[in-house]
Image (cartoon, rainbow, N blue to C red; front, side, top):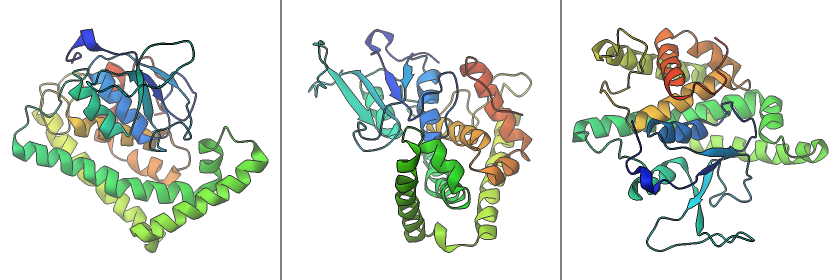
Length: 277
């Protein structure tokens, strides 16, 4: 795919929370956003950034030229260019689509496919995300703390880490995930990956790419949809995050998931270091 309107491509910086150029990062939402841009052939650069600068206090966020009709400039010393900070992977993609920087991936889908696309995203972001958060922040706290809070000097990191742990523990309990046992959460995660793997197996068999190494897509079409950006982000995040060892072991039991992610990586992210097989 190529950008919808290449002449309006702004200079985009993605702030990913980590430095690590040429590597995927642990956040599925960062990879989701990167995939969204790469599927459209839109170039970008990456920086670490910080939660203090993020408009919604969330990673990722981007900085780019303001292409809206009502500019909201970010002042940069020595620069007269109008730039904006945009936050939240879904809202960023929506805004760039409205600005004709990105194509509308779901524009040609019928109502049924649109519902399936939204349902798959909801399964990952509103279910699996919390199971992963529980595994990372509750079961493997120290590994998660030292990776996510890497810019903070160690003595202070201990204090901040405890605050983040308590906040996540309370959030997961209120949300519901924290009320289940470890075995129950493991079963929930496994069931999601089983269902997604089965979906991808059907999509791969019906795709023109079934007999070659080109990517195939979750809904079985010849082009990606929004769900593919999200699914690829979650698979990659699971494969590289050392704070989720149980999820890593589980996802490697599904060759179709690995094949799906590897094809997308080889086609769209050849410059990135790939996860260990």
